[in-house]
Amino acid sequence: MATALVTGASVGIGRAFAEKLAREGYDLVLVARDEARLKEVATELTRLHGVACEVLPADLTEPEQLAVVEERFRTGPIEVLVNNAGFGQKKPFWANPVEQEEKQLDLLVRVVLRLTHAAVLPMIERGSGAVVNVSSIAGFVPRGTYSAHKSWVTNFSSGLAVELHAKGVAVMALCPGFVHTEFHTRMDLDKTIIPSFMWLDATEMVDAAWADLMRGKPISIPTWRYKAISFAARYIPRTLIARVSTIGLDGRRRA
Image (cartoon, rainbow, N blue to C red; front, top):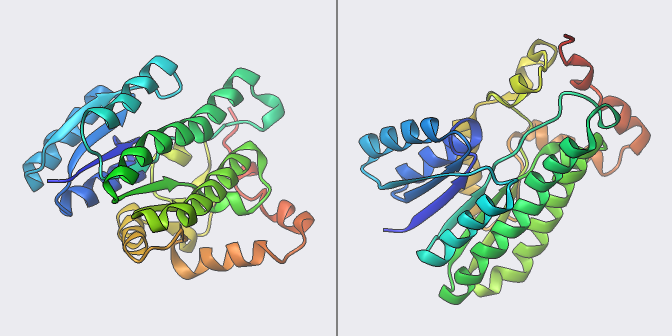
């Protein structure tokens, strides 16, 4: 049975991917900081789907713990990698400690690069495998460091997809918008300011993303409305896009 590794697997999009992969029959390696939550997810997925679940607790911003996860790609074949771990900032760039900004940069960029590199080398040797890097629709608009990091993820993934296609390895950037998860709550975002039609269900989004991966798409953008946003971002003046993209930033709850 093939094995998939999912980071940020305890909640939200990561958990939805773990559930989807379990339904598809993959054994799982589940990675996140919260070991107790990971064990709960592992127990449930094994009970519901009969798959084996390995729990690998790690803070991926810590080099020693990241190295343990990288080593897992060398100790047994991983057919699918989902790079999902991430977080957003509660304050604008200048109001955050630079160390916190560096931690986000590490998790959203450096960790994605390192785990993708660890994953694709054995995939190339086998001539099969897939990597899904969870990016964001925010990467198409100028909206602080988070957008900058996600822009990198999308460009990195789509470029790598072209290079590895002939080697039998699929790479895809998933670019969701607002998804019903804990992500925005942790940012203290007032979710009521976002129109209801902009919110996505994590399970439905992951199902659609998996279908896009199976079709060989290098970038998956869920729903027509987010496809329209990404299209508009290419042609609308960047000053206007920057002004519109502040929606949500001003909705952070004030202490």
